[in-house]
Amino acid sequence: MIPFATKEARITALFIILVSGQSRASELAAEPPSRGAHRADQGAAQGAAQGADSVGEAATEVGEPPGEPRGELQTARKLFAQAELDEDAGNWAAALKKIQAVAAIRATPGVRFHEALCLENLGQISAALAGYEEAERQAQRESNSEVLEAVREPLALLRQRVPKIKLNIDPAVEHAAVTIDGAPITSAAAAAPVQVDPGAHEIRATAASRVAFSKVVVLRERESVAVDVALQPQPRALGQVAMPSEAQKKNLLSPNSLNKSERRFDGSAIAPWLLAGGAAVFAVGGATAYALAGARHDEAVARCREQTTPCTGASSVRMLDTLALGAWFGAGALAGGAIVLWTSVGKKPAEVAQNKVRVLAGMRAITLDGNF
Image (tube, rainbow, N blue to C red):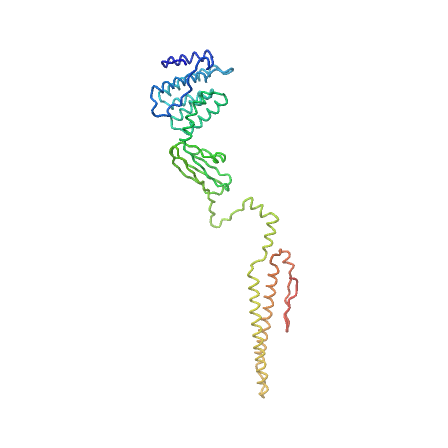
């Protein structure tokens, strides 16, 4: 391992290694990049040693691959050296800005590691976890064992520290748009717990014909919460007619649906019974009037046999006969209507139209004639 006693010596060594283009295995057997402030008891001396290891890592990571512009690489090396100084001084915001500029030129696993390290020390542990995971994936592709070893511990710790929000969205709600702090959450991402930073987070959701949902949750490190995203149907205004959905329209136009609606052409099930009851009342009334007319007739005949003067009372007999006849006529009409309604239950309108009934009333009888 190359000992770096001072900052100037470290930067000089970095320049020599970059110019010579030697490989990491022959020129620099430096320690892997450290994760920074994971433990509270790390002192300033340990931080300086870790910074020296980080410079050694960067010296190899921001190397000069064939065909890459020399000017951009020199800029990246200079920025990384400055970022390393900011890290040692605890100026993580300035270091992050420079590391991100380096990543825009060449994002190596070591650069990704330092970017996540800055985010972690700035309290953005959710983004830091994503950065460490990206560094791990890239290091696996490039077989970089040093970075893989370096990210193991911070990944294990942050996966426990990062708060999580589980969104429960009703699958019956179509095309729901969900956001957390304004960032869209896809349906695939919502299927698993969403990682967030500690603090307050606003969850919003909207969908067509649904009342917008909004809720704020406050989480600390290591906490998880499940949120039921309730998107209630929009209340309809007074007098507003609900338009059928596309599925309902298709169902209404299907042959099975039409047959069902036709089979329901039976009006009210109570109507035939009401008509039958009315027919019975009229029939009883007619019979009563006819009986009274007969009694009046017999009484008048007996009286007339004893009188020498002209007989009276024929008008009342005729009136009762007329009432009896009218009552029976009404009973027949109501009975016919009841029979028509009973026989039309379950039939189509075309079949009902074929039912023709005629009520024939005579002096001695009332008959029904027709098809029913």
